[in-house]
Length: 146
Image 1: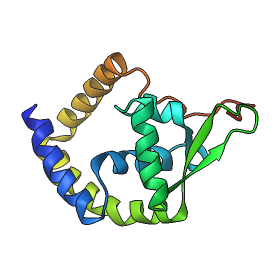
Image 2 (image 1 turned 180 degrees about the vertical axis):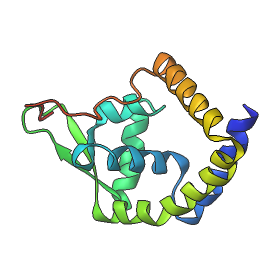
Image 3 (image 1 turned 60 degrees about the horizontal axis):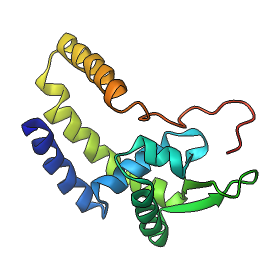
């Protein structure tokens, strides 16, 4: 908890410099690394710690700010995608270097290469156990338009 709190406060301050909250940064990152820079709203909810209604509120706010847009699914009117706009990608590009610098300084530089690899492997194992939807929708299957 202490590690999480310490890193989170450093990250939050850096995100704020770029007009983002931690959850908005997470949403931009998850969408930017997804196929076509988009995810179904349900997959975005599964990948984050947000409820479906929480994702809707965040996407609404980010859409008002021009960082995201919604795209309706052509084959299922109940589904919608959250899609990063050019402005959202630009904001992420502005924010990411400072974020990566903080990760380097406060995480990577604190461990030798073997310890870092072991830690990352262990964290992925725990993540997959406690949050199996963490990568939902990250890979598209053939013919999956929704």
